[in-house]
Image (cartoon, rainbow, N blue to C red; front, side, top):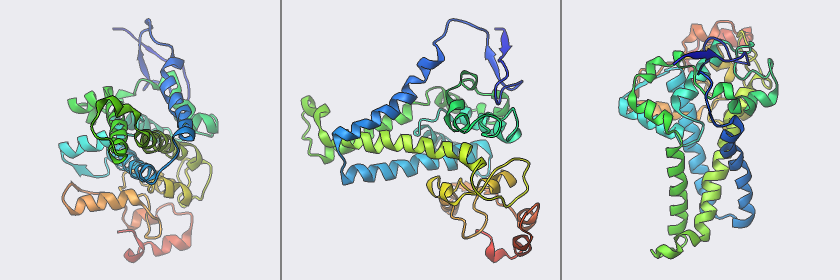
Length: 325
């Protein structure tokens, strides 16, 4: 089959190869599920809220966020630690439950972002386009539907990852079913199939534990692409405009230390010092302690001091007691 290079857009170029034109679904139609998830959150006005629903929201948010941060980002995009093939699939499954497409698609685009950060070829630079394009416009653009497969050949060789990348919506849908079942059972359903879809607590848990949780995960993740290149402090003289932001680090389990990350991309920890909370790294370290992952990469004292804009801080990085363990 012949191929065409897509027109130049932010992030487009020789890495963006797409099939020759054919009869296909308009791109706006493909964006309907994404938009519908946002609109569906208004159902909370009718279902109300419960302690169980809020508990599910918190749990599913944390699980999905780690699937993105610890799985898609730090493992698949940057290979900051090693794990077994089974755990690799588990991480991919958790990431897919956040409904941010598959691990190969996500990691391949992210590698392009780092290769061309804050340049015209960056898929989501707020400096080269706009805040809204960097936040969510690029996700819905037809030029990003296809992944730049050349950048992810190391993981594309696994057939189970290719399958999951194709059916990336399955884990998310199963999580939705689980939230409804938990709410239904907790709400007192007695096994009568005729009333299974009429359980108020089931719908409440579905809306809060899945719908709202998913949308919150979307925008927390997207804020790293947009706000983390606009708002915050710069510790390192990177070639882009990445920033460290404590609030974004809080809502994304540590991803907000974005300038740190762009300085040492392959590090499993993005909070470099003990006061920079990084929940994703804490989970990775816990997994390392029980043997689920190994060869966890961290920056040494020289890397922490290199290109440090704060010379006073750079002078103390050789003190291992100040480095996050």
